[in-house]
Length: 78
Image (cartoon, rainbow, N blue to C red; front, side, top):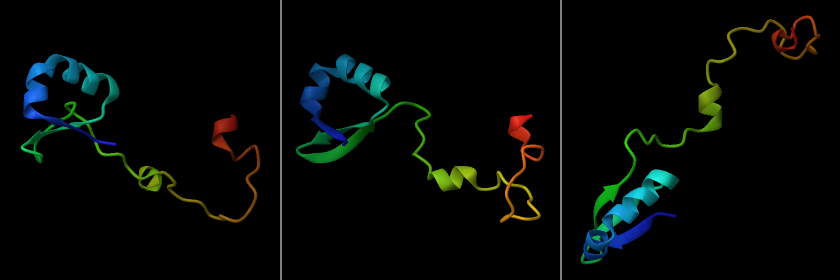
């Protein structure tokens, strides 16, 4: 859940809010008269990637995808 903070509250508690963003990694939206104006987020914050997207390209080639994997063929068991 994104936290919304007015500019006046942000001005009064800026350091506390910055530490909160650093600790949690969650952005804070700063509003002006109830409308979003700015977003405070950590540098380098990347959007969460889909787990399947992270796995894309990790399997290079497999001849028989439906055959059981033998311990001798399983690289991580060696």
